[in-house]
Each structure stands twice: as structure tokens, then as C-alpha cells.
Amino acid sequence: MKQFVGISQNGSLEEAVTGLRDPQFIMLLSNNTQFETHVKDLERRFPGVPSIGCIGMCYQANIVENGVGIIAFYDGVSAAANVLEHVSDMPVKYIRRLERDMQSVGGSSQDTVCIDFCTGNDACVLTTICTILRQRDVALVGGTGGEGRVSANGRIYQDAVAYGLVRNLGGRVKTYKENIYHQFGNYRFIASDTDRANYILGSLNGRSAKQVYKNILHVTDQEILTRTFQNPFGKINGDDTCIISIKDIEGDALACFRQVNDSDVLILLELGDYQAITRNTIQQIMQEFPRRSAVFSVNCLFRYKLFSERGYMQTYLNDMGSLGCHAGLVGYGEHYNNRFVNQSMTCAVFE
Image (tube, rainbow, N blue to C red; front, side):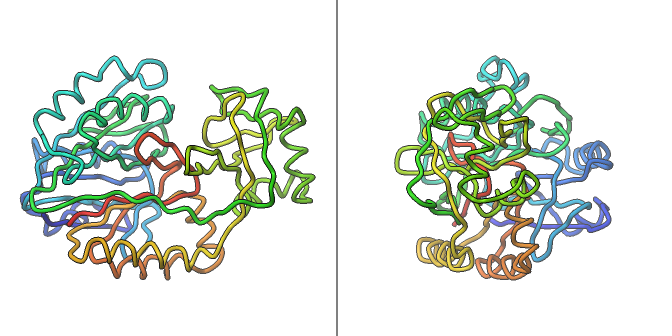
């Protein structure tokens, strides 16, 4: 298979698709103002080609903050795209669509991946999707788009998740997740007074979550929302840690970017040597995939802000470019199989 990447800093879809011929799967990364027009125009140009889209910044050699990006696979791909609707309360209602698409695409854990763009309620959505994907041990990579809208096959949806099943007919596919944080101190917390619907973390070990965070890190209320770049929370998930970013302050509680439940075990994290960690990720991918035809990644908005503030973002993109054809989305949350994480990078690598 092969990957096509086209971008336009000023939002010209015509510029972004220049040179694209016979795509077999398309991802559209657009801006809020032009999203509807881009979705319709893309379907008109490539009718019947499986496609998914969302609103968000994208990147290849450079960041596209308010334009449009097209990432397409061709020459050796079997793909299907569809949508699960009503994800806020009943995503399982449309699960038959995914079951049918799995049958039509075929494939296995060795050559197939699911890529998804979601509008919200991510944890529930991922649990629903993965009940079907795990039947063939198919991995998932994706993220949350902006403005509550996604697209699939030329139509725009709200309160939905758009997904693409992509089978590489010419080789393997594997997913990766990169965490640039490690545990800070020996703090261990039991969460309580949570509001699952609004991602509120009320108390840690029976004390105000906001006050616990402030006391440990010696920060003011005003500093909490920027300090999360250096010190987010982490949720223990087997041998892995899911990062939980702080979104806002709600009285004595903290609003987060992912759901926290009563009795969840949390730890505090700190930023590691992110440059060394990203180099190690690149080296691992190169070792495991000496021949790469495509790399699609999702980087968290907070990683983008952190890297940009530290003057590292362009270097990061240059380094990832050494993998070959690399492009991706800046998301508001990252998906890795059945896990919804923050401040992370997830990617799918195609042989």
C-alpha cells in the first residue's frame, strides 16, 4: 500500500488533493468554518470512496492550524468507513454496521487497523467498538475531533464516532502509544465525589482534589491549568498508565479531559525527557518495521502546546519525518484500543 498526504494552509481542498489518484480510503482534517464545504466537495471528487473526517489541526512536515489536510491510502488497501450515532447515550444501537464492515474487509491483527474520529463520550464508545474488534484482535487508533462534528462517506454527523477499517493487503500493520510522563513521588490516590458525565474529580483520599494538587506542587489556582502540562494525573490500567489532563477548576474540584470514576486509583505524573522518549519510539518503529509505507499518528493538543512552547514542535515533526510518509491529527484526546488517554501520541504503522 501507499500513503498520500496533501495539505493547504489556507483551506483549499483543491490544493490539498492535487495529485491524488484512485484512493481507497481517505481521511479529511478540516477547520470549523469550511468543514461542511470540504466534506461535500471531497465526496463529489471521490464518490463512493470510504472516508472519515473531523475538525482539527493536522501535520506532515509542518503544522496546519486552520487549513485542510488530506491523508489517503491507495494501491493495496481494503477499507470500509461508517459511523455509530447517538454516542452520548446509545452507541451500541448501531453496532451491526461495524460487524458488517468487519465481515466485508476481513483481515486480522496482523494486517488490519481501525481508525476513528469521535465527538465525545470516548470511553463508552471505545468499549463498544472494541467488543467487535477484539473478535479478530484488531487494534484501534484515533482521537477526539473539535466542534462536536465528524463525517463519514460525505455526510456530517453530531454525537457520533466515524470509523474506518483499513486492511493492508501488502504487509503488516501495528499500533503504538507514546507516554512522555513517569510517576512523581509515591503518591497514590483513591478518587471520590466524581461526576462521570462532566468528567469532574471531586476528592482524592477524601480531600479536595484541587487542594491536594496545589499542596503537593505548591501552585496557585491560576497555575493549575498550565502545570498539568508538566504534572497530569495518571490512572493505573494493568501494566499501563492512562494520562488524565486537568481541564478546569470547578470550585474545590477539578474538571478533567477524561472520565474519572469513584474508587479509581490515581497517581501523579511528571514530564520526562520527551526528546529522548520520542527518539526511542522512532528507533523502535524502525527496528520493527524496516520498510514503512505509511505512519498515521494522533498527537494531543496539550503535547502540541508543550512542544511549541519549548521550541520543539518543528524538530519533533522533522524527526518523525525520518520514518518516511508520516502525517496526523492534533486531537483533543487520544484512542488506543479500548483506552481513552490524554497528553499522549498514538499511531498506526503500515508495512
